[in-house]
Length: 379
Image 1: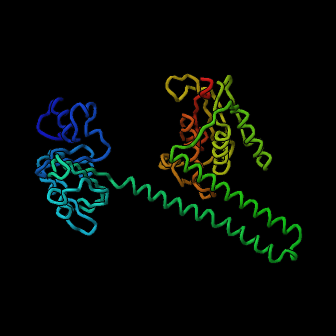
Image 2: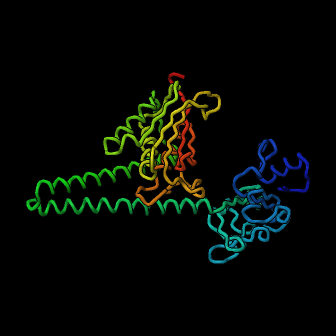
Image 3: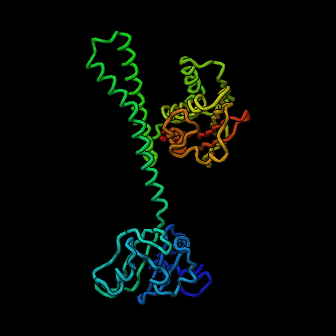
């Protein structure tokens, strides 16, 4: 792809890369404008396009060969949201001589497609004429997806909080106003309901905090020795104590397992989510296989895999790629749709991997693999 000039050899491409980015060949060694994630358009002192990288081609749907040498306003005919021609409005070459940049703003390409645009005015002297106009282009689709995700998160949180808080408020107000009218059994039932709803709110807040830490890359992992088999057994015993049949669970452990260093609380959270998902949304026997395997990390041979499968209807093929996204729900049997997103974040924070597929019995199968690792002070 041409970026600037007409040479097509390696030296020509290096020169074009330097020209397009406004730096010397030494400064730009190893970096080509086509490697940049954002669109880059460079115009010379006459307003003619001399640089047009691959991302700019993708965003504008205009081949670089057609853009190079064209006046900037023709190659990049931007309009503001009110339909005014942007380059005529800002007049980069004849406008204020003190101006050095254009802050990011939403503009429109032909056809009404929105794009985020920034500009840098390169002058030979502080108040001199513009020698280079460097324009950055960024597609708004990623930002729109983020905004939609935030809106969905707010809506989900509002919906999930409304029901338990309404219950808590209703029962506490009733008890305070009419305490003497209720029997001890009635009071206990209402207080147990309030307690359960308060736990539900607490879990939701904990999930939101986990999402915040995962998205910001601040999820801390405090590694300790973990007996993964014992951890799974504790969860199974809790389900049996809560009324599930012991025969519904099958735990198979392949020995010997490598020593596993992980955050026990977070691994418990992963196991809790996967087992709850299998019990709530699946049918038949829930099988948990724990096996030694190859580590997902380069340079490490040993790893541990945990596979949780059920005999339910499974996950439709078209939904497989959305299972670990926010708000995905496999059925209408409750839940916020945040659990598997958090599971994936925790596993990846440990340097592991997680996959979803179809079990032999037709149900869902989740498999996560963790490197054995070790804490820093033992490395």
